[in-house]
Length: 260
Image 1 (cartoon, helix red, strand yellow):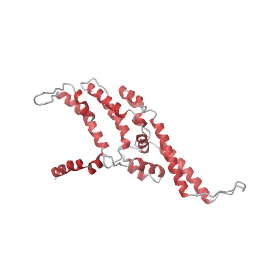
Image 2 (tube, one colour):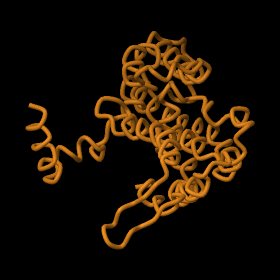
Image 3 (cartoon, helix red, strand yellow):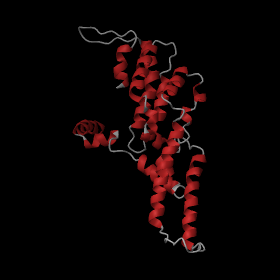
Image 4 (cartoon, one colour):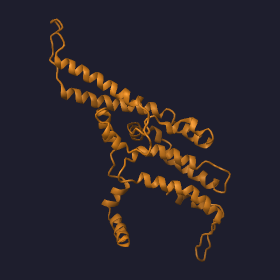
């Protein structure tokens, strides 16, 4: 859609009334390919049926902004228009609870290094746009959101797994029982789990976040529960929309026949 809206801003673009042919200079086509190939890769990535995609929204937005950085080429007018559209659609993305939570429970992006201003020393427009979108403070907001989720789940787990007797205030304090020690140890472990998770470095971006969570759920059981809640592949994802829609079935059937 972004490209479709921007077509009219292509240089040397003309519409012939008789046969509706579009004439674009060959050099412009080469520049277009350079711009659109990464956008195609991004589209395929966020349409994946096998990986978590919601946590990709913010990193992908930053990547697209860098692609739209003016470079004194004939596509600058088109890039400016595309950037304006992104600002219209996504200017509040870094205050979106779900984008922030999915990023911080995705170990590839939990430190928000993709928003580090030092990465954009030569990308003035990108840096300016991210400042306007308040991306710098996004990590702190995400950490607080994660902490709130963490405390809610931890309290529920401890509340259902252990029950302590009510002791009258007039009685002298009794020695810690085995149950008391277990609960105290659970609370200490729960507190350190949150801190340890955030203190660890990010993992490589070619690692599947869901697989990593499953492999490390013994170390971060509460974080893993939050990750499963927010990193799930939603029913509104592109592949599922294709499966459960009539138009998707009509489109896929001829394609399958062609592939056979």
